[in-house]
Length: 190
Image (tube, rainbow, N blue to C red; front, side, top):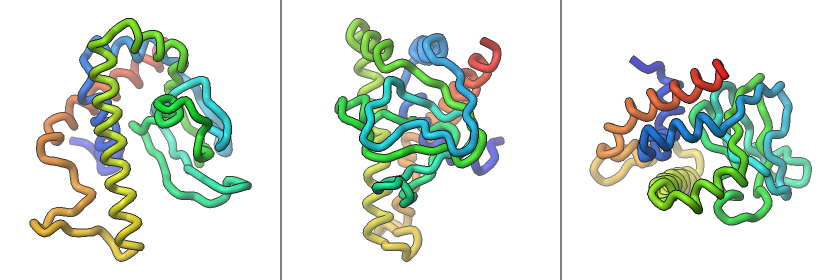
């Protein structure tokens, strides 16, 4: 059984890891590098383009905006992807992402991922679909959070929380958790 934090992390990772095939996951693990980061390390800097996309394996990251990157707007935990927006639109990062604790990431070179997407249309279709669903969920959460303005979780008319997973996606949680653990284990032994 998953601990609460693992479920939260997997909830976010499942959008991507749950839609990809086992072969896709293996490719990600083969082409990622494990990086251990100290607390305070800026993984992504606002206004700069990153040469990599990251999967958070361990730790916590603070997403910050502003001139001194001092206004925290979000926290990232294991299972989250970092740098996906800049990867999609080829623009500089819109926020700074700083390790809030000693952390570990899987770093996938942007160039290598782009080449894989160009030469493997089936992978590209699964990857972009998964990324689209992931970003749609993130946008919905942000919209709910902004509209409720700290009032608490917002309820739909049917009594479900707006932040709850779509029941159809729940089946992917266990698969995504296994895939996440497999990537993490694979990178620890390489």
